[in-house]
Image 1 (cartoon, rainbow, N blue to C red):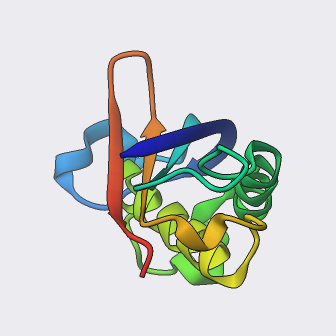
Image 2: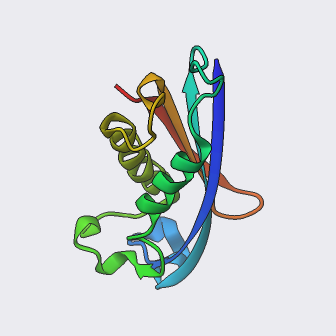
Amino acid sequence: MYAVEVRDHIMIAHSFKGELFGPAQKLHGATFVVDVAFFRETLTADGVVVDIGRAHDALKACLGPLTYQNLDDLPQFKGVQTTTEFLSKHVFDAMAEGARAGALGPGGEGIVKIRVTLHESHVARAWFEGPVA
């Protein structure tokens, strides 16, 4: 299987509820490096997985509404623990919808799987991977 991966980052603030999270129950900031990998069985007629520029633009559009936001204040996250794992699925859903809607341009319709990895530090990361369909 072929793959292309693009990268960006977001800076957010949030807090968690519950003893499991210790000091992270208080409001704190996080900078996530976000990698999105696009997979397909065969290359396009142009010999690529997907247009890298469009893939990067789609990722920027997905992350834009989260950048420099306190996630605790956003209505779509009300009552949700915005863990790294949760956020990787949130970005996956947006990227998969973008792929289905044509945001990746010609060849994007051949993407069969996407993996979104959020690096929360140099020693920890989480990801969500699934089919686009």
